Image 1 (cartoon, one colour):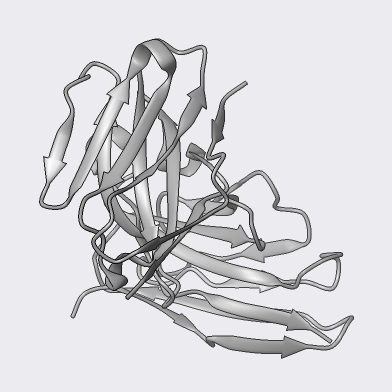
Image 2 (tube, chains in turn orange, cyan):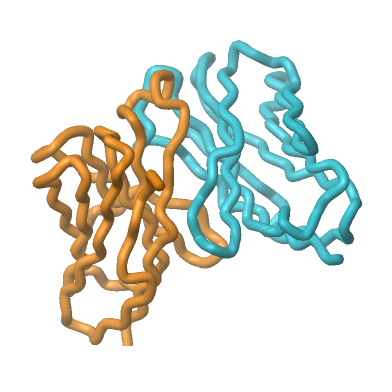
Length: 116
Length: 116
């Protein structure tokens, strides 16, 4: 089935460690996104990428890094510089960037990161 | 500034009741898109509807209906004869008409619990 796969589903990290969250899609979508969701909050954009080897910062990029070496993959690294990393992280994709063209975002099931 | 307000944090109904989820938005743009997404317990957001600001017709899809009123900046979502499977968090979102999926503004969500 086509879709977005995020792993791991649950992740625990000690303070000071970097962790990488995986996001893979087989929808042949050009655009991919990372969102952060905190309890009782809407989604906040961390990074997004329109094409391979290109990405832009979202609203809360500090303390995070991404890469887009392949069309189907968009991993997110939560670095030790992120002061409050405990959250639910969602990866999404769309056919293209423009809302008028793509219509909708497709989401993975998320990764829940807890810092101990 | 653009903003989406979902004033109802949590709603609880009994199966077969009708329920309306409110969404009020703020934007200076005259043209824009509005969305509703559903987030079931599994975590991924699922697209429900996209509406552009030109089209103020109400839309019905099975038990779901949407009431877009530009005069009051509202885009409310009604579920008729609710079912336990409707239990989820529902997000309303606002996007620029010529803009990017990455710039969607999400509300904080309304958690709907449907009890048998």
